[in-house]
Length: 314
Image (cartoon, rainbow, N blue to C red; front, top):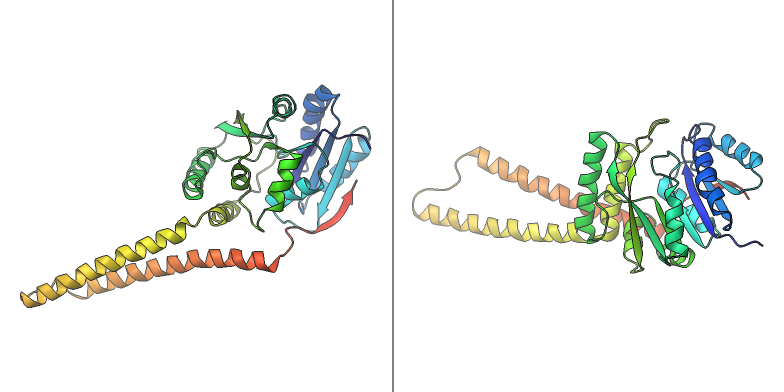
């Protein structure tokens, strides 16, 4: 079997009209310019409800000279499981993950391949130096990843996160084998200790279609990233509990002193109710945080599959 030098993993979810433009750029700007290195393309149809799968099948028929593999999920499992599936089925010496919306420049793969094969970097990460997107998307992304960076303890985590990356076959095997059921993949990559090269780029505006990356999915991703790699929320709860207890103790002393001096620091019903609502709200938040961690433990113990494959076209 001919050696495969690199695999490009492309998750597909409602990308019917992006597939062909993405493939054309990959073919013209990457595959053609690296003829000495055999390439493999792995497309993962993550339960798309449009004609994405049909377009992929026709693409494979029309381009027999290029090794194309199509993995179709039974339903939508999410972008991260789709990428992990691509990683697990990839056969290249290194694996590149890129989205199919053309917001990340495919031609940057040439630089990433050079960094891997010539400069011998086992991991190459493309970081978003600038984003040609709406103010809302730039602001929320910046805030979310800033919190994740602080809470996870990864000082080298790019302030805008990353999806576009190249990882060597050996390093990828180590990372995938140690993943949780809902992993913080960027954190797993950064925590390996392998030598990493960062390449900045400008993330383009999406020109075709609308993103399916909804606020609900973003929030779920944010919570998963924090609970996957940090115990800081739990420790903060313990610290907050100690502070509230100390404040309550001091307040109790003030009440006793006030009683002996003929007055009291508590005047009326409002102060009592505010205290009850404040402390009750804090307790509910703490229970919610604990619940998130317990849910992660439950999912891990149940050992459910990250994804279910309906069919594979080799």
